[in-house]
Image (cartoon, rainbow, N blue to C red):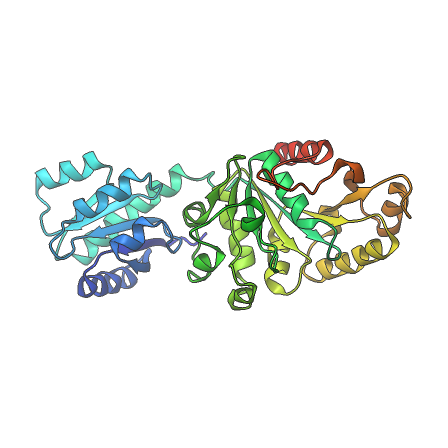
Length: 357
């Protein structure tokens, strides 16, 4: 984490915004992380920041703009910048939940000190905010049931499910969700994604899990910068105790960086010679991206005693432990209104272990 306090400026006054950004970027220990209008700030999709500076707008005082942000449960310290900064205004700001009040036109030194103090206090109170664990689920080849495994684990644990699997069989459609926002909304923030933005984008499912959906058009993945993979993993740690990233059959650097940043990798395979051979290729692909084999284990899907390979034979073949074996009669794929929320016992037990760390 940078020592600089990152300040998001919220105002509808573009001239004021430019002046404040110049002051922040010229001060020691603080910098601007971006500018949003009030409606954009209320959406929760914002660059990663340590403090919010809410300013007077045309015909609207800073306190009136800040009230819905503070009432919406913003975890970031909020400072107000107003042309009316007398004692009564200060008391009203503090009562609403603000951490400071700066008079406009702003004195650069007073602005920097107030923003720095609020940001440092917020960092101290949220020091353990990024303690969540991240599991990436990927497939050795198409048709192994990777997305169904990832969804079942997330549903069983009430986890955050992040759909990074390219293709037309998206998790939102499978779960019957109609998300208003997707990963594409996070991609426009570049590397400045915080856990707040992830929470705002995630749609809640009746099972208790939350879903960050893939873009509706699979071609949109080509426009997502590769760095978003590791950035999303980092932000997810602060958004949920357990996050499950479905990266499908990993192709490209977006998937590779998400896998490299995860705490654990689950590789889904079926118990046949061709699929297990693909596991070895996938492990080599992960190794080239810095993923240690020590953090990789297998989920054997559709296993039955009459398959080509025994479980022990699969472990010997790829030199990886089996975390879970789902029998073919467990019927992982389920249709209907509850599709994707049903979880066979082996995956439910695996989800419990993942929750426990």
